[in-house]
Image (cartoon, rainbow, N blue to C red; front, side):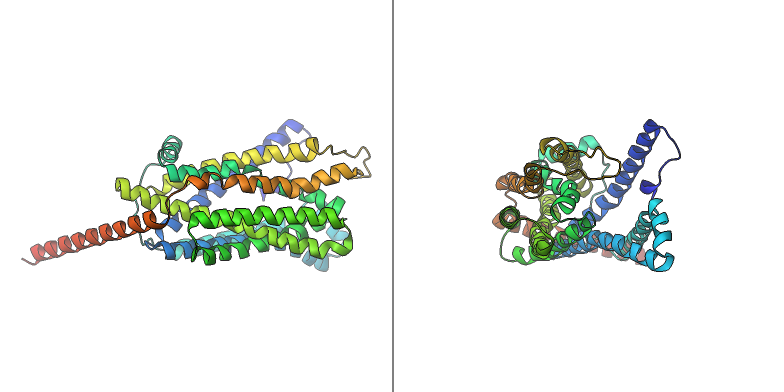
Length: 394
């Protein structure tokens, strides 16, 4: 909630420091929660099929939660207006109270569901407790080819997320209202949730490698279709429903990027155990997470550059006008930032996966070997326990 609390200062420098510190703390805490939950996907079952289903369901619920935040930020203002009246609500909105309450609701939901997760889980796969460091996590990624290929998908596809920055301007200039930004993103979020379930269905017929590539090709095609349709028919209030429907279909491919890499990493951890005898979930997900954060930083640089520099965006010079009129060329570039540029990066992100080989026969062979190894270890432990019991009885 501190993200929406403005410091009581007139100093731009102090305000900037406050903003960066609070956001850095938010990101650090998010990573501290996200990384252990990701690791559990690799530990929940020794059976790759069961594991894929569990990770898919977890990704679905995560997508629902992320889209739920967009619903909360719509519902809370409606409730506040009903309880406070229009004028008092405007005063509260000016102080950011609606955002603070919305964040509090989301934070409470997160705490409740995280507690449910920790209270109701059990690792079914033996895990290794290892000391995690930045150096070791990077070393692990670069010494395991398949894990490196999965991690590189983040760097190769770092520009996928630029659509989020331009979505406000799509809502304002092409759809007619900044209030439509949430309406614009919600169908995509719902599509993402549906995509996580579709991934699990596709995995029953195709390998993780094939599934990842198929969804990338589909995602790029969906975005290209959205661009062509939008360019062909133009934008007006009568066409918003078809536009939102197409957004839903564009969102489906995000279910792949939220799910399939986690399944691949779990398979990579099996490969490590097969080769070295050690499972290194923490290091594997930490290394992948590092690549993810580097890619996120690249997105946060690229998106503003495209929106404000490359597009030729004209800022308003009037205090009474929030959004200045833009030329058709600028609007066309906005549409390209929302569709074509992400589509290019969606294609680029599957390039490393072409070299990923933890599939089909190799995956089946490693899975069978690990099951045999664990069964032997369990038998040895049971035999030792019987021996100890017999000695105690004597």
